[in-house]
Image (tube, rainbow over all chains, first blue to last red; front, side):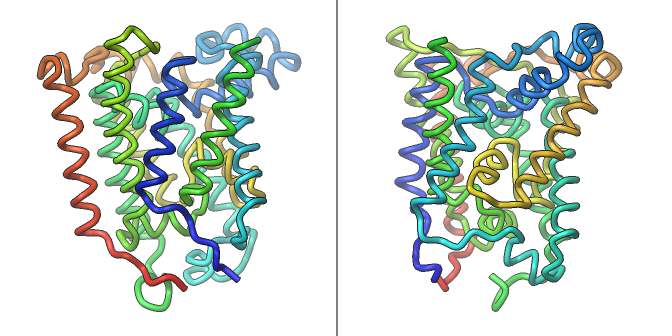
Length: 172
Length: 178
């Protein structure tokens, strides 16, 4: 049932390069963690306008009517189209998680929620994420992007070894 | 208004490509982190190498807008460590969780919600953390070109990243398709 396969690394890297260069040419460096700030600003502004106005992190970012926000919404649409046009089963809980921690949805959702808090807190402190800092930055030869990239890969690889102990034959 | 449509189109294209590349699939991402499958990290690193050359070409004919972010030894480093723990644990990053949520993965929707909480938390602490962690060790927007000249910087990046793709191919496994 899982006959469909993902693209190989060569076509994916070429397609991704095409999109990245299109974005640099028509907008500027692509970013996605900034989209969280603009979206949140849009949600909070009507509820607590004084709070948003007084906070530097919202003041430094454009509001919801911006490229940064339509980009992240577009990504959700792109993911939707991709998923619907591919005959590959979509799991709410990844198989490798089930092998390590069982099929409890609650456990997995708590873990990804905590993961989400960490990736955005870390990205906002560093100034960007995998896309906005590592990919965009390194493409512009920025030391910030290269430095960030080396550390996120190293730490994620160590973390995965600690969290997903059961891997290897029969698991992957 | 043009910018909004451009953002949307760029997002749809980007989301579609990373879905086809398998980056929205946490199983694939965890396999990449466990060095069991090199496909995802190979395309990420290769895309940066090609984009750097492409952007250099675009810039030489005056196309494209660049904005180099400053590097802060402490804030960029500590942010990366926190980020890496979340990425290794969940298999999602701030970009992929939008596309994965669109794909209908419930665990990605929780990552997205967690992401808003993380953003809210950082925005609350910005005035304390930026002067404390970011500014004192900031070296400004340094690039490889500042260190190695032109076109030494871009060529060095391309060669180093190409070697990394080759190394990932050697060191990471290739799982048998089920």
